[in-house]
Image (cartoon, rainbow, N blue to C red; front, side):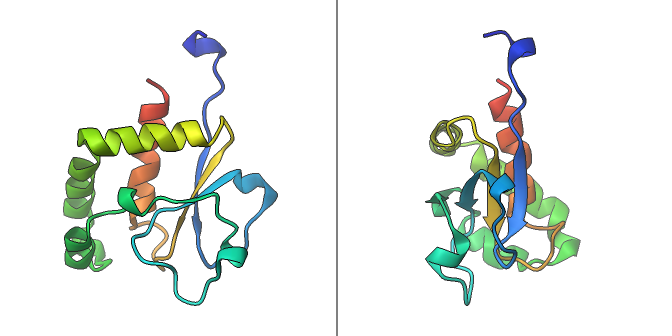
Amino acid sequence: MSRASRRKLQIFIRRAYEDPTPEDGYRVLVDRVWPRGRSKAVLALDQWAFDLAPSTALRKWFGHDPKRWEAFEQRYRSELASGEQQDRMRRLLSDSGGRSISLIYGAKDENHNQAVVLRDVLSCLSEE
């Protein structure tokens, strides 16, 4: 299939504390830790991709400090560049079956979190 005839994959980011919607498509939790106070049933996940989340060391170093955002983004992209992570991301894209994907995260900051970075990386990977 040519690139021109392919539909661009939609990848959304959603907070774990927002209720799921029918438009979410394939819902994937992308945190290493389970969102406090949220049950499996409420989250309505298709997958928990904890291995795609930032390493524990990187997550703790970042601490959701916006001043560290640029360095965090660069370090997280480095983690995602490994062959193992590339394989995991390709598997996630395949598992979605062409449906839109919603990356679910627990952080309060909607602009400075791992789902923002992962969405961008997955978008590029899906266009290859």
